[in-house]
Amino acid sequence: MLFEIRIHSRGGSGGKTTGQAIAETALSEKKWVQAYSEYGPERAGAPVQTYVKISDKKILSYSGIKHAEIVIVLDDSLIDEKVVYNVPSTCIMIVNTNKDVKPVLKKLGFNGYIFTVDATKIALDMIGKNLPSLAIIGAMIKASYGKIIKMNAFKDRIKKILEEKPDMIIPNIKAVERTYNEVKKL
Image (cartoon, rainbow, N blue to C red):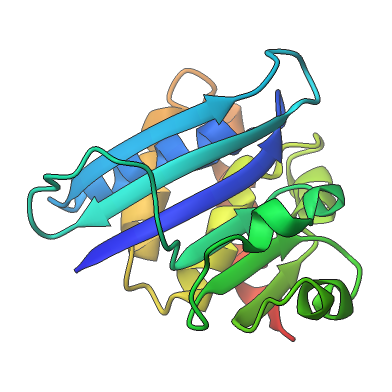
């Protein structure tokens, strides 16, 4: 089965890192992957979309993502028509926020499943920095019931991603575990 993931973030906030970490984890699980980002003006803070395709079979299409099964929003100020564009009613929307975003998403016509977690606060608490890009993946693993990537494989990937910063490995793993435990379905 092909899974399509779209990540909305701002330049410099880690959306590309989120997509790359998901893709590398899936690859380590012997899946086929594609991951790429689409930039507007290349400046810090500009909206960025990152796309990830994951499949058990070779991905033959190199076209853009048509119907994302998962949408991750790293900055809730980005919630607009682009975030809900062309998503099926079975879409899982994961938003990094401490707010109730359900009314806004419903007003925009989103009829899928909404999950929220304050990954920014968790990253600040656990890592000491505003780096929610890896932590938010814990929420995705929980919301998708581990069907896209597995938690243990992702923890192993974190060790490889941060091998040159060994003091950051345990705090990031704890942040991922915490987002997994604290994500809420609205």
